[in-house]
Image (cartoon, rainbow, N blue to C red):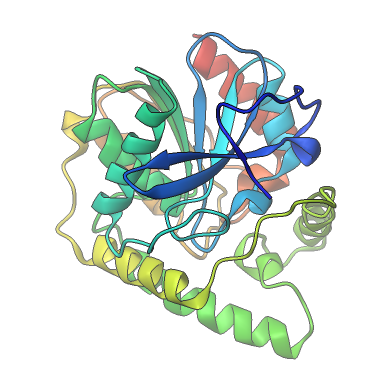
Length: 289
């Protein structure tokens, strides 16, 4: 169940009890959750492919919200948001900009993870006045090497995990070492902390639309990111098998004001979930600077 934005609500103490609210944008109801102190530039979180409200690590959201106003949301047609999911990154970016303005914000910071990072890049370039700073995690530029294979990697890993009765995130987001797998299992347990009013998982038509968008992003001519003039923090693990880690280095090299976090050791696509405390500390420092 969601609550319209203009309805009164008590402040949440953590992401696991944050109220799900909605805001209408041209007939589409976007579901979102808001946490942290009011005032200042809000931080908008853009989730990975197939992700919904429930897939953000509560340790990351709570850690960021200790100092910043943090907003997570379901993309159009995903989870609790209505409408049909777009099949291009550019359309997803326009949706996000409309959502932000519907909440009444004139300027925001963005944290984009994987697919969310593709979307964040487009918004930063097309809406320079709307975006103050950007954090890009586990993502890459348009035309980045290996990105076109992301959907097929996800499908194969999901089928294999199903046969083994294992969550596919353990192989998609984490390496196969004992330490990384242990961190992965801890992350999966944190995702279960919210026990009421959980967002629905993504439906198949929406997932297929995202697959198409990601493939198109991967097939594009390599993007010239020199038009993105906002400060950007670039983060990933050293062994990302979904969006290969060299795309992170490529991003940092192309962006005029990039700050590259040394690649997290023995970490994959979900590096920020494997090292949540370190990531939150670095992110908050970057956003304050």
